[in-house]
Length: 269
Image (cartoon, rainbow, N blue to C red; front, side):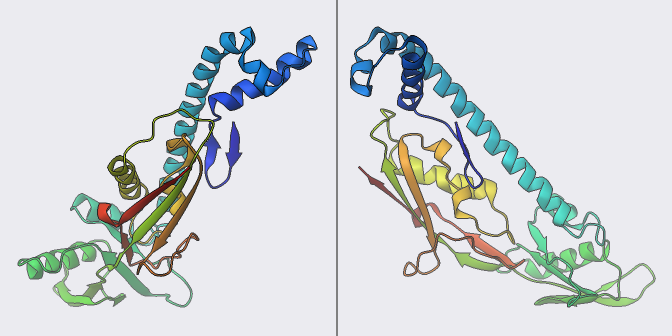
């Protein structure tokens, strides 16, 4: 089973496993089966079922690795949060039902707080929601800090003083994805229909991407999830004109949104 830094472990096809065994059988018993004659041999018939079982276990291993990789990504994200300065704020916002992100501290922005909260500012009750969010922030960050943000307001803290607090709304970016898959000649796995494939990609984005994270296209569909494909190319665009495959370096307030109807799947023979 091969391994790549960006895609993890890629399970072999049944044919690839049998080919490896053909070489070993020839070496072990001094035989001379080529790929074509091996298919008609008793060895092939005997080992085919075993190869299917090995392939199934490799698929499970690849999926386990992907889940472990996602776990490490989540842990790394928590480590990178400035929680030593504002402990628990992101978690408190999550508990209140809001996704949020914070700009990592730097020497240039020392003493300035940058928070982005994913909230619907068109809600009729937004004024009340906004004040509640500002008050929630004030319970974790001391008054008197300098805040950057488009959503501003004052909060009366415990000693009766008024202090300004602020946060940003997300920079929502409609994101299109274009995925080209080349069908493997060595696979007889049934290819899912278009809606199923697009739903898989959309669900992966929802599960593996968060506001403020870099957009890494290869995370949202892996080779282990499309074993019938020999190759896949994942592209994204913000305007349906220029397409890119490189990682999008996001700002802390970037929120890339991928809708089911904005995903295109192309399958090549």
